[in-house]
Image (cartoon, rainbow, N blue to C red; front, side):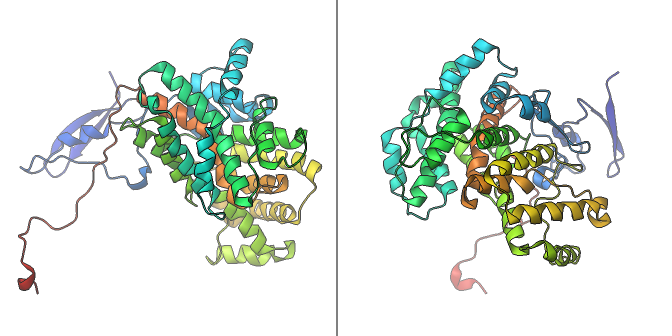
Length: 428
């Protein structure tokens, strides 16, 4: 006998058996529960999707209570230690880790698509010099849909493959071009002899040298950061990708929508907020006053706590180790000393422990980016680069899910009922 939920509607006295499948009940099951003659059944009210599953997915699993994050079943800690970003991207898109031959083909297919049309450079040149890099990235990714009109053939598997290659490959190029534009520097073309993160560093920082050689510790740290940010279940930007994708636009347009969601300070700007918080604290001796301000509701402790995790964010543990490796090559900073002391105090303070406020992925990532030489305005851009693989995995999964339809949430209407139009001269 299948599991069911028995619901008694106290308005009518009727009892309903609602099937439970995979630990969930279908919201449409409540439509049958009607109390009046207007034919309207119950709807489920859940602002911000606090307890509503909008899809079935096999991409990413999170157990927030126990601090577990899995990509296609693989623990994030193992991938961060042993994998590369491009291998992880293959895993997300295809569902399995690649063989040696599959990995070589995948890397080749990504690498040959790193260049962008020369007209994209002209498009970027039209932005003001102080335009936010995220705004430029959002616009240029959306513009790619006009360069590849065949991408609208979303149910053609080969067309989807090429679109996925192009988006993963071109995102670092567009991001680096946006950064160089903000500095008034000439654009650096991709160097396909380098690794995925090494090539991105080349496009960011190469000046007059004939061949850019990334610092190995920095190159590896960036690769790990890309792995950690590659996907994170049904977050705001992934929900935007799936929701916009449900109307069946090309994937460039859907990805632009996801970037727009990521642009918000509550999503992609969190690590920037951490850096600004540490700058405001300034020195270690001012931490106690800051902590007192947090408890009094006068300050916000950025980089601690998470909507999903009620335990230590597993990505934060990896990033903390990476910070030590990067700073061994670039040198420590006073900011990091303040951050470490703040973390130490917060993890020992009953006020934060009782509220399960542990460091999340944003707490240390910003300091690594700054140590590399990347300004805070670029932080959400560096989030978008790896998340592209996750967005596309979720988009394709949703596209091929026969239960999915165009996203169209219900609402609880609380406005005026039907009333007659009154001419202006008669309005009081």
